[in-house]
Length: 498
Image (cartoon, rainbow, N blue to C red):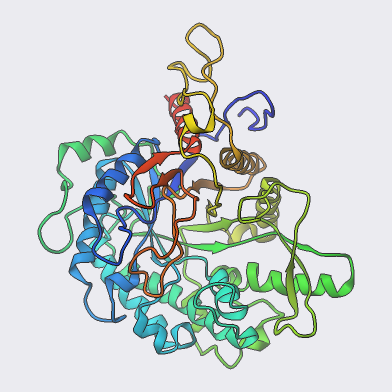
């Protein structure tokens, strides 16, 4: 395969045969207020997703919307919205990867201790059973818990993110309960989800979209390439994880900074991975969890996974914290790299190096990988015309070159597109080096807002993180240059595969 690295020549990344590029599609059809979902907007958003040419999309269910009390049957209005969304994705030939828990709990569960309460793991397993029964014949891939390391460290140890608790190492039971919820949800999905077909009968109530015998869906699916994350000989649901990982760089060679980095690495990179894949906690942390782990827990957590999801943002520079800190580590500023408008360093090569190291460290324990690039805000003109870039947004019909052999139209280049391109090339290089990465999800498709306490709807101003800009007043969607660039990449790959 040609090298994916062709710097400066304006070429598109060269992707491995069968490699899937997907999009984080959270928030499709979500309204600006806490009211019901807008089904017409959701269907239109799926059309915009299909315009990229991708065949895979990550979608998170809203636990507070589906079970406002945290227990009992699914709330039918929200469940019907999920029905519509899954049917629309199937009709567009897009395989969904569905996350059960994205970090926001129903308010009654949070009030009852949230993830400090072991019983919350049982509640997620109950949700998994209900979801598997209703949507198991239309969901291609399942992820029980999204980014548990971030939820633990930033949400419960340092208070940097929701739910905003600063419990330091008293938060470690949260990690065990999240892992237990993962394991029990995997068991529940394997017991209830009926197969890997991306479409099937609409679960519950009247149909909300085309059924599995609809010619539009049948023809679309028949033309799809094989799913790279699915073993065609296997039966049952495809289930994995989505753990946030980051290279850890010590602030200095001082022994205190190195020790702090090692501890943060154990919490961020190993605490959730090793129980899932190896059935044990990291040696340095295991004594701190002895009072929480019960007989049989680690066997429940270590369930066979069809894929391992890696969410990546940037390397983390770690140093020893000051005496006033409740935790012995702190994040330090990483200088010398381009940054997003949130101040996050953009270091694609660190992802490539980390994936290669990851494979070398865990080898046979690793299932196939899929990588998700974390969202990044860039305040930029929403349209190509405003940005002063060429209006051309697609490749010439014959690929990167025009039909006469000349160069095709120039594609717009901006910080968002450059970040996306750098990470896509980094993953392609890791694949060349023998890392079994099958898919990369980018995005999100839409601008996002910080989740409210109940996730009933977006709260506050929308962050400019999407491939499509969302007007804060009327919700209108406008493609950014990165949207057109990604469509060109996916289109070039499709043509090269015939």
